[in-house]
Image 1: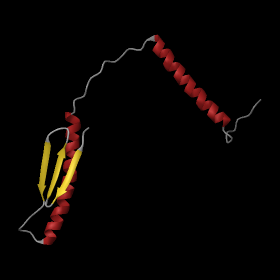
Image 2 (image 1 turned 30 degrees about the vertical axis):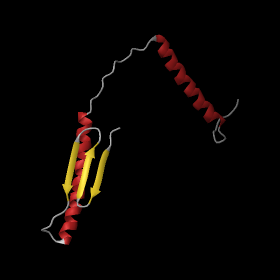
Image 3 (image 1 turned 90 degrees about the vertical axis):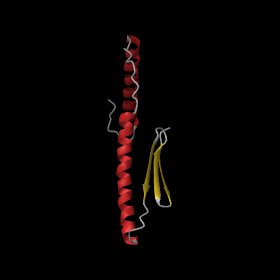
Length: 108
């Protein structure tokens, strides 16, 4: 299965994808900044991480190998089955409406 894993450990955010080898470490620790600036930096980094996750997902979708398939041409018997299934479904819906106590159907 394809999983996006984000883990927060001490002052680092680890972001990696299990099905391909993409590994990102964001360092949140800044020894030169004050405590308030550090909190603002953390918030902006979290927003940046959110954007990073969105772009990673988009890139993964574009890189995903799409397997082609052969389109099967329908035979006459398959067409009959499809028509009969549609007819049965339509009959069931009609009977459901007709049998409901709230319907305004009249018997002549």
